[in-house]
Amino acid sequence: MANSFLKPSAITAEAQRVLHNALPFTKNIDKQHDKETEFGGQKRGSTLRVRLPNQYTVRSTWAINAQDQDEQSVSLVIGQIRGVDMNFSDADLALDINEFSKRFISPAIKTLASQVDSYNFSQAYKAVYNSAGTAGTTPNTALIWLQGGQKLNETATPEDDRVAVINPAAQASTVSGLSTLFHASSALEKQYLKGKMGNALGFEWFMSQNVPNHTCGTRSGSILVDDDTAANATEGSTTIHVDGLGAATQTFTVGDVFTVAGVYAVNPQTKQSTGALQQFVVTAAVTASGSECDLTVSPAMYTTGALQNIDAFPVSEATVTVIGTASLVYPQNMVFHPEAFTFATANLEMPADVSFKSQMAVDGINMRILRQYDINNANYPCRIDIFFGFLAQRPELACRVWG
Image (cartoon, rainbow, N blue to C red):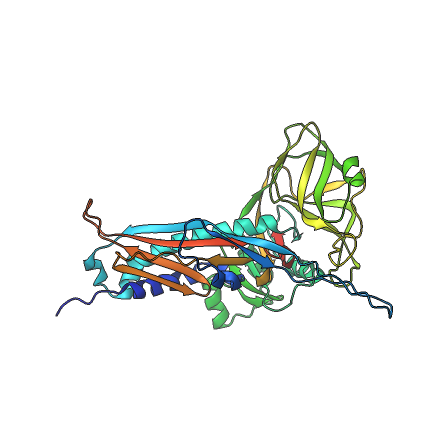
């Protein structure tokens, strides 16, 4: 009886199954824009405009005050390529799909998935300004995670579908610390074995080795807001000028988080102060000139109108407090709503002269597999490609939890 060979579609379907289960962060974020990325596999990529929800103010009189639309948008750039390559023969294709997956698909796809997930997570945390926990202390109590949920509540994050993605150390400490809250049912025991902690404290929990670490800048000294910031504060500003740094070569790195004395966050719906200082994240690395530098930050600062997010602009000589110790490294666990981030993959070209090929999209993730005989080396190289983009579209719907 002749051998029955595995079809490209069967291999792609198995690769998608493995990929989906190996993306604890990426599989839990928004992918609604994936359908907009069909541009024939051109290597140049594409930029998609992502509209943000409109915001309004509320009047307290009978007189109508119709508001003009001030539609906000951000750009999702499709431009990241990740691929994994291997060789397999026709004899290998005669294996059953389970054996073929064990030998070829699983090792390759898990490596690819780790790279994609790690990239997305590392981009995500750098855009998120809200944070909870204590830098240098692995979270291990209900209070820390509830405080993360509090941050989400204060930014009017929807309560449904919230997710927590944490590193192995945080999982071990949290499961131990919350052992009286997690029931030892067989279903949860199986979830623990797979790195999934179940539902608790308002989140669905996932463990990931791809939780990124943040290295703080070298800044030191008594850092204060400079006169220039106070004098030039305008609605929508993303720059805070600081001085008092300890040396001319000190740095702030992308992802550093700090507060400014006297600048409080406001609830996006009521515009009332939350009673907590607004946290800012540095979005561009900078090295001090003398003892001062300009910090480019997120969120942009608004003190009035529909976009108001703080109760006052920074004033001269206000104290700047940076989270974490200079130059040290801290894990960045994350709690978030899926709409905080978005991920899209593109359809890629399917060459007409390649017979062994398949492309498949599952849950918003598109993957292409191509195999062709290499006459120069007498083998069958196979390539697996994912062409994608990631965006923190609404970072206010996420909160970092320091480890």
